[in-house]
Image 1 (cartoon, rainbow, N blue to C red):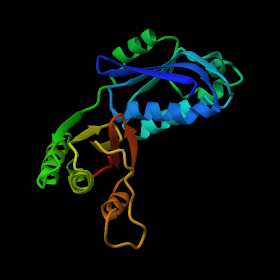
Image 2 (image 1 turned 120 degrees about the vertical axis):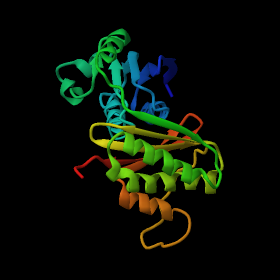
Image 3 (image 1 turned 180 degrees about the horizontal axis):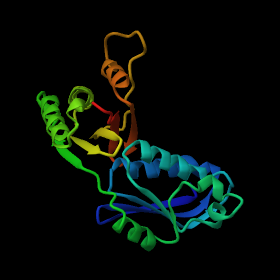
Image 4 (image 1 turned 45 degrees about the vertical axis):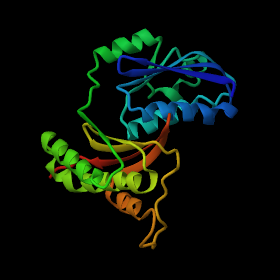
Length: 243
């Protein structure tokens, strides 16, 4: 990889500084690094591109892909700072017009300070024990009632139960349950200490591992997983619709 990624904390945010020549061979690694940043579910992710030189004209499309993932989950604001000329030139600007581009990290910070991006969030640390799914359902119920979305208690509890049970039954590590509310979605995520990809059972398979994720797939508006720094985060979302 010819692009280095240095990540540092910044008052609840993460700043990922990329440096080097960005070619197509670097796209997968850059995406992985930024996905791991999103798995931390920071208040915002600032991607500093001031040290990047574009080595292939389509390589910067990786940043649009990361922004799309962030919009789906965890709804973390992703701001791109000091973008190279190839991303802001008139000939290519249309490809990146929907990305929040700022001249510097300082300008991005100022934008966040006045933008009100904070989301209602609940975080609960859980042990991989028999009672963990029940505790998760209690947390979900309390959050949904507090946020005035009681109609989502049942589906959110089901998704939460399946995610937590998978960790308790098959992973056996500490886990973090995180719930957050956006104007359109309720987001449920469980982070664990295993990098192994969660796989849903095949259609028609009525038993065995992965059956719970079939239920999640049928219940959630969307679901997926992203690698984390020391494991992974599995997430699901539910639309906030009229009752």
